[in-house]
Structure formats: C-alpha cells, structure tokens
Length: 172
Image 1 (spheres, rainbow, N blue to C red):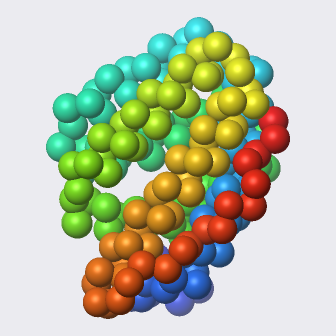
Image 2 (image 1 turned 135 degrees about the vertical axis):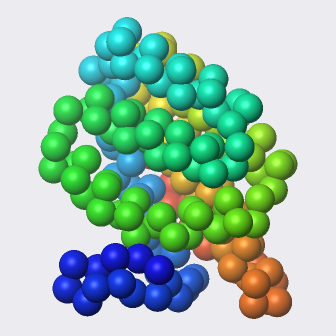
Image 3 (image 1 turned 180 degrees about the horizontal axis):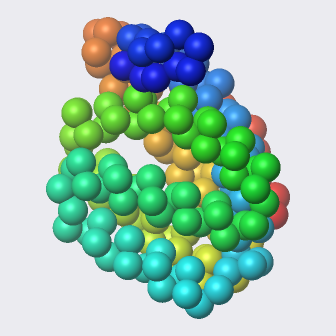
C-alpha cells in the first residue's frame, strides 16, 4: 500500500510497465544528481556516506533498506539542486514499494552486488569523478530494475522480461 494525497491509501499493484517507466526516469535524473554531487562533494558528506556504506555491510535487510534510502538521499542532496532532488524524491516514492520487494524476497547474492556497487559509487565520489560516479549510478539503477523485474516475474510465474533497455551510459 502507498499513500496518495488525493485518494488516501492506495493498494500497491506491481506493474512491469510502471516499473520500467519509473526506473527510466530515475536512470535519467539520479546519475545527473550523482555527477553534480561529485563535483560539489565535501569531506564531511563523504564521511557520512562512508558511515552509511560501512553500516550497510552487516545490517539486517530492513535496516539495509533504510540505510540505502539515506545514502541515496545524501548523495543527491550534495548536488545542491533542490528542484532536481525534489523530482528524484517523487520518483523514489513511486519506486519504494518495488524496492521493498527486495526486503520481502531477500537474496544475499543481490545484496552483495548492491553493496559492491555502493562502494564503487562512493569511491568515484571520493575521487570527485562525476562522470564515473554518474555512470556507476546509472548501472546501479539498471541492475536494480532488472532484479525487481525478476521478482515480479517469479511472482507471476513468467520468465523475466528485459526491463530497462540500456539507453546508453550516462555522460557526465
């Protein structure tokens, strides 16, 4: 279920079409914010991001989900683009029910991959390499959408479709 300001509580009905569209938009916006964040990154923000990533290594799935949200928000906030961050937050709210599926249908191998991707993104941010950080974020989101599509397909007993066609890597 998710909250809708105009309709109250709405029952979540997963849809591959909505998933695809949501992640296509996220793959456009979030790498941009990550690129901008790398260019404006401070040592204090990097230290906070490092703490999130370190805690994520041993966090229980529900805590990992929360830390993931906090990590991404902190990265995008570092871009210092309020309108962009607002748009990203809207899309992340739409995606939240899909992302919660990864907690309910926990896969340790997927978790390890996500953790490694977060660490790579953090490394690029630490190097202030916006182009690389943006590209890594794009790939991170693509992998996430593919994993969630597999979860949706396994729920429906169908083979997984290709979710987010790689629209080319982000140029930062």
